[in-house]
Image (cartoon, rainbow, N blue to C red):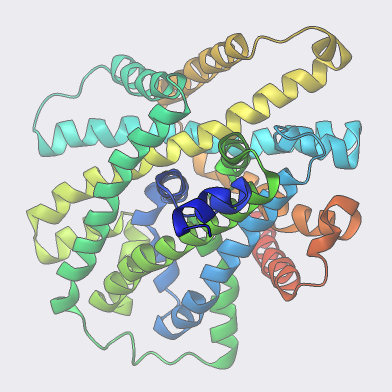
Length: 429
């Protein structure tokens, strides 16, 4: 008779591999870091300006919305008949070469501007900290930006394991600080926000405005393709990779909901509607506004630290997507020539790194003020790729037909259409 240990070793490898492990946790933190950029410092202002009660409904739907949308994109990448194909290759496989080139081009130009913003943002954040908190002279911008951007890209060139480990080091203090600040503000909570009762039309208008804000504050789609490929390499079996991908994405959505939304609620309950309107008018981060309101030097020091941690961790996730898009563009432009010649992936990654270093460095030196507009132009594209494309593939692609008929598919399409309609309206209004 077999004992438990023998029976355990006799189980199929695929079944044993479905257990939770450190690899899953590392990716949860990486995806969390990708989602939580510097925008988290403005999220309480943007999400809370419509009042408290619409925010209560948003906290109910934003978790499932984030999880189902990113799971759909992960399943789309996993649907390839050739394991190891990234999102640009899967698009071409399912929709043809012409559509593959177009979507790959859009994918790259939706993520690349965000990377430019982070390269510029981390330079501004560190420079501001040196001048305002350390009371030192501002260093030469061309040198500071080169060191910061070159250092981030250099870490990425060291390999996936190093990036995951560095992201862990960044996200742990980021989560701790967000949670600690949320707790710290509890004694300052007031009921002024609870007394604001919007009309039915105002309530739904606020939802329409707020959904895109939360969607893109929780967005980690640029890292999804690299995340799926990593799952495939680690777990070998496609069904096991899908199981762990879904579980990891659910974990990511959960900690985003718990820590980020707790921070948002704590800030909103601390401030009055007039405070939020003033913060919006001043266009400053929530921690800067709180530091000024309560004359608290500790919060003013934590603001730049949170921004640095958030920008750096989010930089890695967006670099993954931008590099994937750039390499995908190269292989599609080269076409059969790239297929016949064995492309040296290491050399291609180095060329991509050099391209990103030069472009991000130039933008950081120039420090343009139009980057926010460029980012908003990429919003509809990201929403289409994250919400609509995987659901369309489920309807059209035989490899994804087993996911048809789920209520979550309709939910994702509706939320995606709401987000896209608001973004497009704001662009043309």
